[in-house]
Length: 436
Ligand code: GDP
Ligand code: MG
Image (cartoon, rainbow, N blue to C red):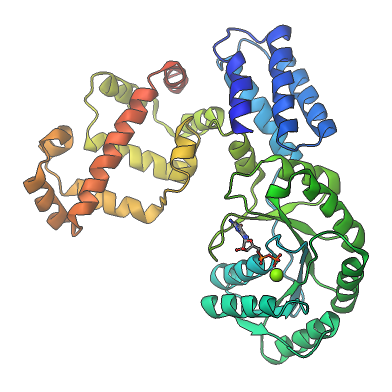
């Protein structure tokens, strides 16, 4: 989808004005890209119609290029379509009971573990996992293994073949043992069938969960939507968990499910590791779907934070190839003010994909700052001076390893490249806006 949208939007990039002709062309291609990515045809059609109307209604005097403007309009529409804002899960109730439903293989058991881990780590909860997949002994074992791994108690009744009664007993067990959240992992079938629906319905009626989450594999495309519909008709669930978004998945499922069942996507699962769970942010998903980096909001945020004088000076320095570590330090401070560094870098075209798997956190800045602080003014101004002996001295001064210094040097080089890139047409525009 990303490549196709890239192509579609490429058509309009660089053109001076948004006209009916280039909008019509672009919109047609965007629609095709969405449909190819499993977005329901009607939804894609409605979306692109709104994009077209908005694009044509835009004032062409704006300082954004038509390409950027179209990107922003499509982005905003995608966000809207996916519900606008993040929605958390309901943890009221003593204990709160979360029922996990979905097809076999969708990732229920994995997600149950992740959710328990998340609630324990981030919300200071004491969750209980409940194995209600009574058909496959391996499934119970799987949950036990996960529980052990993350230090969460798993409730099982190997002899009991009635999921409703297991779940009910588990809730009683939770009350007695001070567990404040009960996560009920259930059995799924490979496809929708009546027996499964009846079973999950009975469990649902018996335990009256505070939160029912429907888990769906994002790789199943249009089928995911039909499954979501069936489960929603039966359970009237509260939210959706979209799994396997780490693979070569299409963005279409997220868009369509949200629209068809009118329930929020609450979590996304991006890997088999217990940490690979994220809250669902429509903004980020739209960025991801667009894939080309949200230049527009980068500009917006940058504009808010950058001191215009600094920006002008910086621009000159980059032009003259005089960008040094002191400037790097200043940039870091700006970035820290602006928010998450990765988010921000991810907004730059071409950078988003490259840094997807890189772990950048605020702590990383501390080390960077320490290293830069132990460089001499000359070294900061002229980084090429920094040879191995100097690196060793710097590392010692900062209390870091030489590898850390090397990593920083590399990062610095990459930043230099990025800066160069920003001197292209898009970057020029950004700088113009900043110094306005
Ligand atoms: P269940 O049958 O619904 O309980 O599904 P499982 O939790 O057992 O998951 C089925 C398979 O998908 C397992 O091999 C999991 O490791 C894998 N899986 C689950 N979630 C993810 C995910 O987010 N990304 C990837 N790559 N694999 C996942
Ligand atoms: Mg399972």
